[in-house]
Image 1 (cartoon, rainbow over the protein chains, first blue to last red):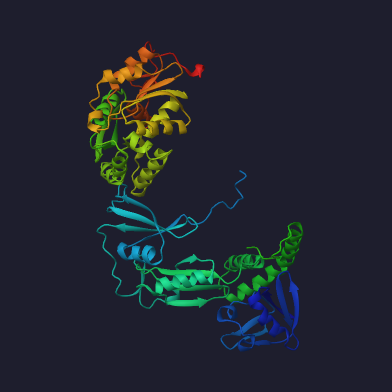
Image 2 (image 1 turned 90 degrees about the vertical axis):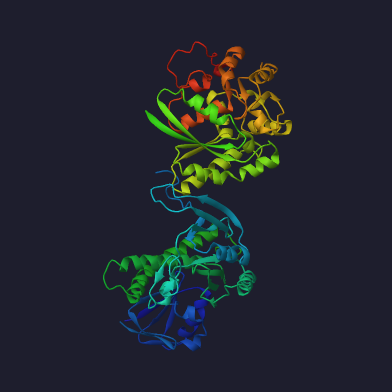
Length: 82
Length: 225
Length: 261
């Protein structure tokens, strides 16, 4: 089953979405003002690759469907199927 | 039901009031250091059922016709502040987490980086220098403690708030209220509930925004203020 | 019988308020009053001394507040009217805030506001007045009342600057000044627009003589105190204003002028 992650479309979040959409198996759509990142399997976003500030890194996630957050720290954000 | 019943009617902070045991330092901080004019004062006694001492209630202008106010009670003994955490109004044990102690604070707004840095300059030249300067997600703030121990912030917006952030805030709060009906609420539960609300409401919201934009063209696009 | 405590804020050289106000309210049939004064230093009715006096207001309110009054009357009309249009509302609201902040339930009135209230209660617009003030201050009083929506058709200034001496002005001199007014267009006469210039004994006689309602700063103050305390306005011998709620037949009051406006 496809799992989805919702991210509000504001300028601060765009670098993270840009990195994540480039991962294999990840697709990007829009629902209203939200980006929707969808994939069938685990996804890991490396914090350093996004270049965002601390406050953005810890507030960019808007909603979870079919996934749960396994890791969200200074190194990475990791989603696994629920 | 009147025509006012559904309207948002208030217009800012008339005043936020705090007790002080050191009005001299309070005046030095707010008036002489920050340059907030004294705009009002009341000399009164405890005439009501609460037999409190004679007191002065005084107000500083914090811009926008809003005010920060203090009460000074003659002869009222100041709390012991050499141990623990907090301010002269509320004290906590030494083991209380700092984030909790700091969670209650006042933040004043400035319109530019230049203005923020001017207040930083004033504070740094005083007995109450800036303790932190932090860029958050969309704001930048300086922090200090006033002479009463009240945690004091001056902040500026790094960019205007967008309409979708208001939608997002409402979805977050609706999700929070929903999940708190059940025991064991967590951030995970919130994000799952919020995803459901996004699917329910975000598309419609976008359509409404676009319909509105067609009615009122704006050079700034979706930016509201 | 109910007892109402009245706080009076008076200029230090005033000798009339504490005499006339108890004399008027002492005639009330259904209420008793006690009077408690606090004084603001002022000898000469000059703009500088009036401003200095106003700065003592907060201290006076503190002193009166301790006596838990029901009503406080700020009893210097010219100090307020010389400070700018609408000043009585500003002063009354500052005093009200001061009292409320300290938890006092006292209500506050000023003789300046009371005069406006009383003229409005009579339902008249065209007035004439006698003042003891120097001409420039008297002109400010006239302008203040005109800004409140009244037409001052004629007025006199007796030009007594020493406030103690204002309290010694003979009634005959006040009446003579009133007689010299052109009252042909006036619907009411303010025989003393000053709480220090004695006039209580003149009010009823002047109503007889001139045939229009006659009031003074003192009778207006008494009227406002009674209204603010929720007491009936029914006091004999001090003009028709203070018989507003009287149910007795009035043989000696001037015919109502409301139809003539």
